[in-house]
Length: 118
Image 1 (cartoon, helix red, strand yellow):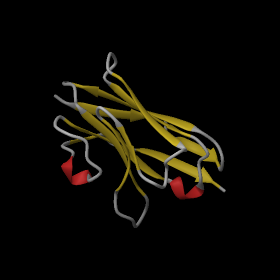
Image 2: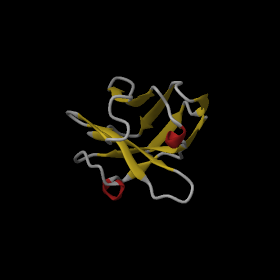
Image 3: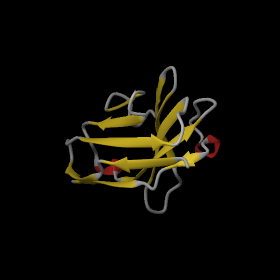
Image 4: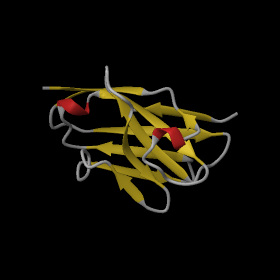
């Protein structure tokens, strides 16, 4: 059974940092990514990793996605956090290719809340 389990969310002040983790089990994936969804908004792409890394413009230079293949885990280091980064962050995985479209991902974690206070 495939599972993606996120951890690392929480409450942080503006300018602070958090590191999210997503541990996959049941199989390995070529592409893994992070999406986020704020209340009343659509789920949006944040970052993804395959052979290369990809970032939304809104997080470029502040967030870093990385992976540890030995642990089958992907990370999202978030620095210089802003109130507009507040959302539920979801880990996603796909065996085929990297995409910025959440509809292309087959597997999802349960989500972890990130709240940035001003």
